[in-house]
Length: 490
Image (cartoon, rainbow, N blue to C red; front, side, top):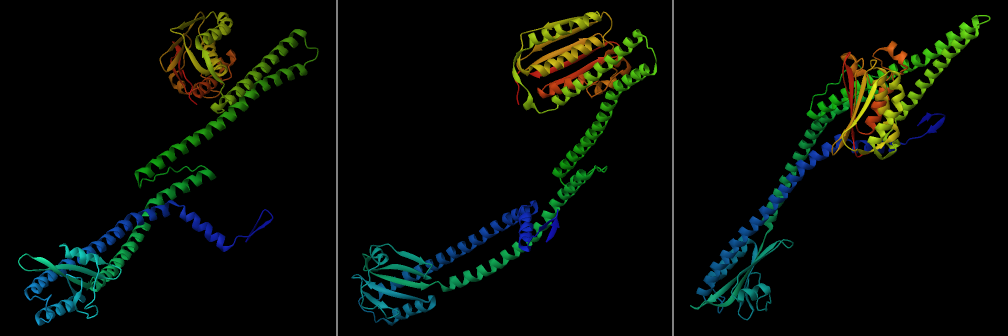
């Protein structure tokens, strides 16, 4: 019983034990123990049963063959002494009694009329016996039958007379199988004891192996639990098995990625705060300057208000790009996929950006190698390609050029944006797609950049299962290559 959040909660011992047992039954440790026990004991049990059956079959077969031989020998003697006509022969009677005593059984001699002329038990003499085995033996076929339930073997042997070997009677012998059953019980007892010992040994071995296998997994679980409470600087090394090594490597990679994401988040928050504060600071300085002066000239007032308006526009641009980036971070289900003519899309983008290019006297050329139609989100890819071309224009040389090419194969379409601009230093190329990253911050502010354009572009392309790469040499220009599937696969 315990109290939680002001409520009285009662847990009975039975419920607690059930919870513990249920948890154990669903554990990997229990599954391993059960699997090893089944794999080890089932074959042993099957072998044990097989040995018992084989021994029983072999013992019954030998006993049947032995009785059959004895009956055949006695049948020949019965013929020699003409026993079917005269049952007073002491030699034959002694042999029959001896056979009965040795095998703990009963022998009956049946004549041609199916009348019992001799019964070692003295119970059925003079009676008629109608038996399927006796009738079959009268026709010349010796028979044998094993009755496990009543624990006896019954054998018939024909008695022949004269040189023609005509069947004139049948010897019917029933012998007890108590000795075989006793041997089976002894064998079964010893086999059960051995099977029990094997089960106990395998239980111990299974417990050891299960603990050996589960121990590294438990350590990995504890490390994951530590991550949920706070990052652990220690690298996980569990090299017990190949699989646990792979798990620990994947865990270390995940932990590194989580740390990187956490660091990126902190940097992103810091950058957003800085980027949003900068225009506000500028507006604050301009406004304070106006308020601190008396009789401000209209020209100065208009100039300062124009600067404030520019800072407000810059603030709006940053917020708009942040909203676009948030939309790009959503899942692919938010994409509005439809079939779009990419040639017309690229022509429209370049047409919109033509005034910007004319201001800088930059020549923009579109080269389409073939008609291309693809399944895309037109709004998001328009924004992505517009960012690439606009950057190529903004960070270009006077009287420079921007070359945009469109091509496709059977699976993808390719867009290449090359310029004759200032280029990107090699050490900065791997960071250009990061949020708020700028190669030249002062020059970027002059151009009005927010540092989010390429991050938005990359996210839009990735949402379409595409890829983007950058190739650049400082002072020689930059080339962005984009590859996007023609058919969108969710």
